[in-house]
Image 1: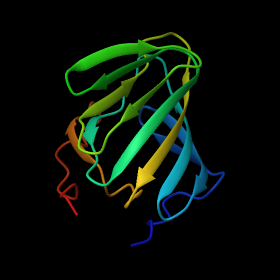
Image 2: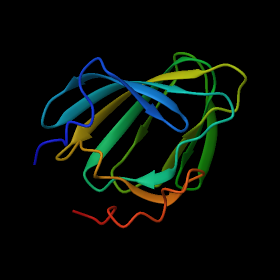
Image 3: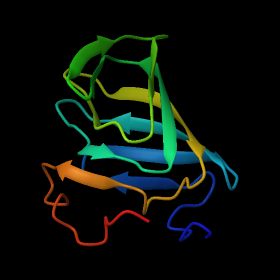
Length: 130
């Protein structure tokens, strides 16, 4: 199944929490440059078919993975396994910039199950497992 092409390489995609730019994509990997605006956070989410690695380029990242919550600063990274609930947020006063690498059998925006979301997206019915 191909990506819906909601995103194109090099195109800036806006989200309620900030923006991302797709840097590279194949059937089994995707690389994004993500900016999370100050005091914003992504949904508490999980993926069935992909792993993610996050590397902080600038700013401070607050990372939640399952029951763990910790901060990352510039140059630090973390790894999220498929099936783990996780969330990224920016507790700081400057934009948080990270590089995200997705790896797996499905690196598509449809492989997101949202459990909690400040922007009303957690109860969407299109987040069923594939």
